[in-house]
Length: 160
Image 1 (cartoon, rainbow, N blue to C red):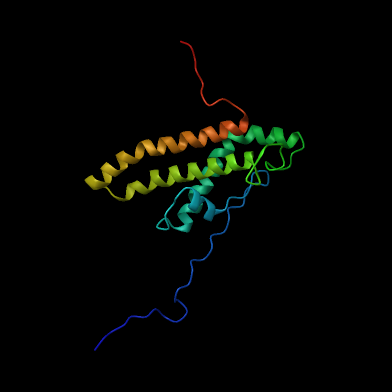
Image 2: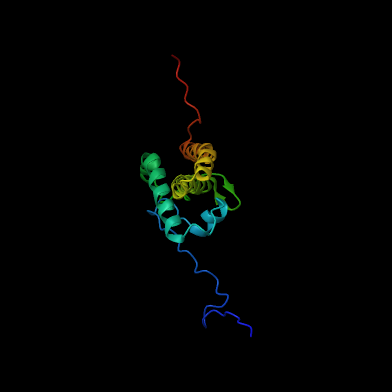
């Protein structure tokens, strides 16, 4: 006798439900969670709610750095980041590309930082040590994107 397991009716080969975009404040663009997952190479083992929470945290981090920039842009008559004069790349404002890059990088850094706390074995500790530089590099690149939006240089040097 052979036993073949079959999923209940209606569960056969259904694609995962699409993840809803994170709606932003109106000035900054909404963030497509599927795009963040794809661009930042976030595996599907990271659940949609965890990804969404990381994106929200990233948006809040970027917003802190760009609050004055956004207020000045709105005062100058630009209703959205996309409406600001900027070069276009691949049909999008370079400023929007930079913003989405910053959000994606900060979200990925948060997920790596938080995800490594699940395995406390020696192997998990070694992997966490290997990821630490990556987290710093992701945050550095996100900060570069934010500074590029603001038109600032990427380095600050003080003479001592």
